[in-house]
Image 1 (tube, helix red, strand yellow):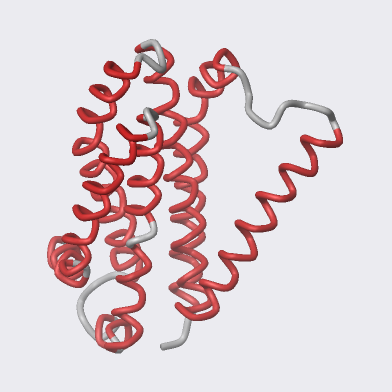
Image 2 (cartoon, rainbow, N blue to C red):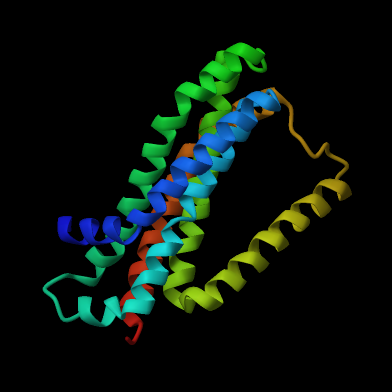
Length: 209
């Protein structure tokens, strides 16, 4: 497992500098627009989708054909993708949280309990996004998966807006609603992630390389 994690880490090593570059830009944006949530949401989502670069590298290099000749279980190969993605999410969260808290302190946008609730929601959303990305890339490959994810995100975004318009609810929920959602969102995200992992293992085991 450590060998697989190291391989995936070095596969995206060149992407790390871009992540730091984006973080620096968004830090400036968060202070300029006086909104700490811009920093948190953009960096976490950007970090989450970096897992796609590993799949691209694997496909271009024929890694999966080679990996299946090595003494690794297919579940371990899949698990390494999830572990690295979660480590990247945690790393980015630890990196940007001090700036988020400081920016919020300067702008006085949210109370600390409200800020914590929003952080929980954003992290949960990034985990749910990850849960869709990995099985999609395993099933369809890098080229088709990008199209599928674009259609999925586009459909969900406009579908949600359509439903909100029909039931006449405000597009943006109140802070109290967000706080209530934040209590269950991490549990829900972990359940989705577990289902995603089991599905990804199943897809990888039946895939021909």
